[in-house]
Image 1 (cartoon, rainbow, N blue to C red):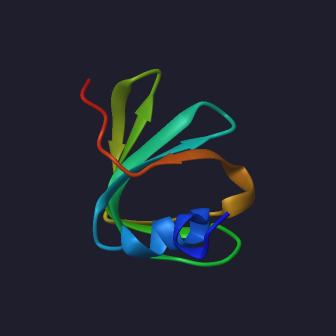
Image 2: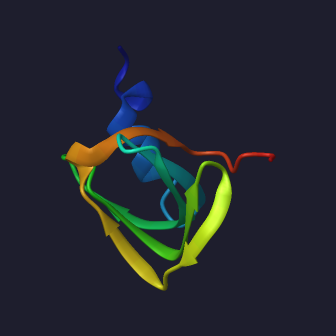
Length: 79
């Protein structure tokens, strides 16, 4: 895999952009990704929590532990 297409490099290029983070427990967080590290720990600003697709809670800033992440979507969902 060429270096620019590695997952972490893609995340770094999307810093300060909107992302959606799906956790293993089916919770989803959407917000602006402020930072990420090699363990896929992510800091979101203006984070919103969704459960089953429905808005549940608004957070200011949120740290998501990488070991709980199922996937990260770098484009905002349309629904």
